[in-house]
Image 1 (cartoon, rainbow, N blue to C red):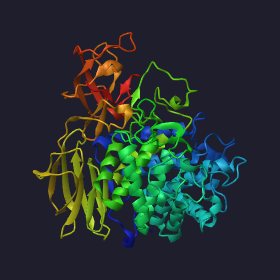
Image 2: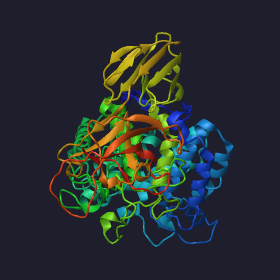
Image 3: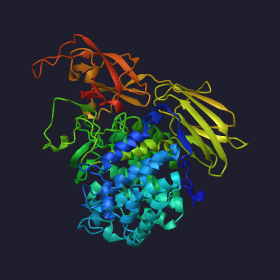
Image 4: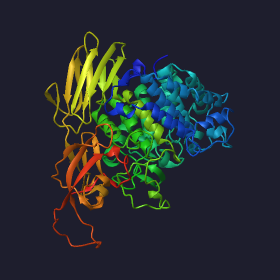
Length: 632
């Protein structure tokens, strides 16, 4: 049986992800986030068993007949539990901590016993009066898709086949329902994680019909209108030209289609995906990598949408939804596009999302969460929930919540980060992200390779790469110089941004320098909400200002940032991980009482402020926050 991320050698496109356990974080930015993993696991387990939470492991116990009770909460509860299991499997792959398996052993038997004899499994159907395949919003395929991926991860990490057997039976059942293409079920499914999950199963088992079914689910789009753009059903995917509808379901669809393309090499799929991607990054994505501006609205083609991509250039700050799941899903799509195209733009945006809106939804200790990730927040302006566009506005991070999909999404991403960092091909290794991480793997041709990266990126500019094992003839090493870095060097020589490939030998040491300084950014003038404003980035990290970091009496709304600002790099002692803060002076523009007044020359009164990384906001007392500032 192949590894869960092994692509068939006759259909490899560019690069493939490494297997679980082959890459291991060695500290640094990403290693710090999962260092206290048992604390996070126990916190999440407690939430998943809490009666007030929207995702509950106990539903499996009820379905298994082990516990008395009724189904509780959201239709997508099962899928969120599977994401938690996947994250635990990812962590076990590198830590081999038996405590993790002890926790999973409490729940896997429940899942096994919940499965119907024909392979079907979904507690929100089995424990209620709902019928199978009654409505796409029941999230049956979303749950099943996350089962598939979790099962593959657990097998790869621990050699545990219990969930894999459940997954295979369920996949075989799906083949009987949806193959050949079932026109009556053409609008299934909402949140199509099953496409990626089926490809994971195909890579692990080699069962061809799983790949064929994944392709069918891609092709089904547009065959039945359903709820139109909300579910990406108004147009066939191969005809689509922009990202539409629910931002999680959209990126899951696009990521799944990229997985399918990796094996079918259907150029009509790749052409469509590149077209949709280009529209997103030029018209519909925030500087933080958030991709979901609206909570409720209407698509440009007239369909009602929720938690969705918005109109072009419509990127509001304070009512930005930017669901954590959606931001991470966009990074997942970018990661897959990087694999199949080897184009730097996908790596650049993947990195930008992961360092900003992809992780801002979790507290620094990963025990409290945000569902939404706005670019501005005001403490004393509570908006009535009856105004739906503001109903989601975060006030403080939650532990349990009425929709608990984001915490396990973040958890599986952080614990799976080694798979994002490295990829392999027939000829060599690709470094997709700079991080403290070691690799002990083999190339697609079976040749063993070992290498190490040592760096404090993104706080420090130096990246050292050590080649500890490689084929005798050497191997190709591919790495990406981010677009923001205009004066990088490799082995002391200037190097431009983009993808670079060098031949390396055993014992070789490569030093890459990525000088980073604070830089002001402006938006396309078509973005009305950011016109006349500036944001601050240092390297891949977007910065924000919280009210508690203003040294004087001024409020955040009174401040403007001079375009000739200089920034001093300072510590953020009250927050962990040795992050870099940026100290500067901002101009005070007193509010006054008048709504309008004649334009007068600024008095140039200033105040000292300290900016912090956007992902770290809301980890102290509740405070005002902004990413964009009026330009002075």
